[in-house]
Length: 533
Image (tube, rainbow, N blue to C red; front, top):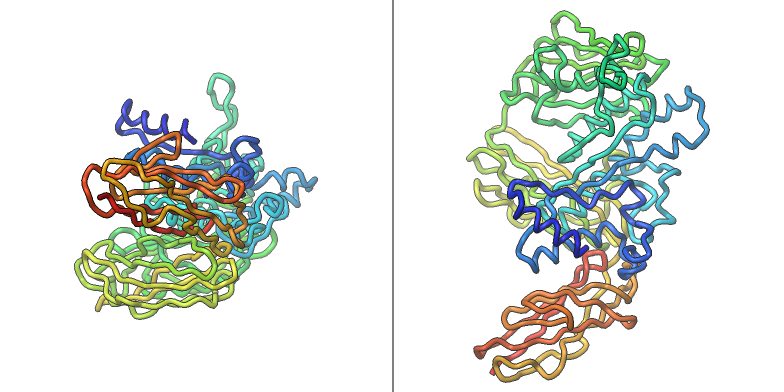
């Protein structure tokens, strides 16, 4: 971790515009257990590796006064269990389109990536729920840190139409769930090439063509809309999904429809609430014509349409919004992670526009198969001003899990909603002051007794040994025996005890020192009060 901090900080001196991605673990299991004997949950109080790393990066950046981590990046592979299952090609074609559910589905369990043997601290640990889980962790531990997948792929042949379906689904999921950066392992390629880069096939790969549906469906560089809108379906995501967005003027809605069912037509009824459609053009990629996008003639909109088996269809719908909101607003952080039974804060805030927004409701609700949670939401400041957010305090349930919430607001022109997830982790551990509180000494001198705290991990899943405690002083200098400054990290011994010494400032006055545990152990804080005479 020290090397990462040092090199990440130094990189900015070499190239101030550099964006630092890290730490890039290979896959889901490595988020929790790296397998290293010197850098693992066993070496830092049983804390899973990812939350430990994020927490350490945040604290060390607080100490240095510089950011070392711009983007939390990982490889998002889940398909090895499919490849190793001995499936026939027909079975693979049925399984591959499902694996994207590991990115977003709060109910999707995948046996090949069962984390029961990896972690004892993550809620619903056998359900990856990868993007919301990781966003919640980042938003809570190191706010302002985006999430990136620098490698992902579908684990099937480039010429397989199943790969095109899976890729098209991935682009929709990543956009809808708010992933900030994404790189496919092996970017979609138009043709197979020889060692000299010369094409050796005459038709583009299906997954290349499915990528064009998102980015250049008509050959004139028109692509999917830029403003995501809610798109819900009662169908199983194993056989049918769709995604929707508006363009910047609200005059065109794009709807990407994926019928993953190889044997049945999808008969769909659309309800475009808030949008008045007039006409549309369809652009289709199919398993029977997998290398070409086939467009229809423009025609009047129909709320009922059919989509052939194994097809990807983009509907480009012309029309207008019924009542475009005067102000766009969003959640300052839509996904958060908190210990069971604890409290937290949601801040709906202005994104663009000058009209105030009245928050009318905030509820925990059932969503995507996850039941409504028993926690509470309390709107304490109900107005979003142009430069000031609303305040919604929540209390998490006492049982770990995934809690979906929806917040509703009205700007006088229209009613809109925003939603997100509260990831409820194990109950919090505690930190208590053991000794050293209430001392006094001559200004400029070291206090006679160290400032000592004791960690009780409780039911957090962590242990007492090797936990980092973050000490911060309002004045003077702290020392952990190795480093010194106004902020230092001390490590607990086998009894859960960590301590620092305080050298008082050169002027008389009251000095406060806070000690905080890592987020994964509850992130609890205690405060010492000392006096410089």
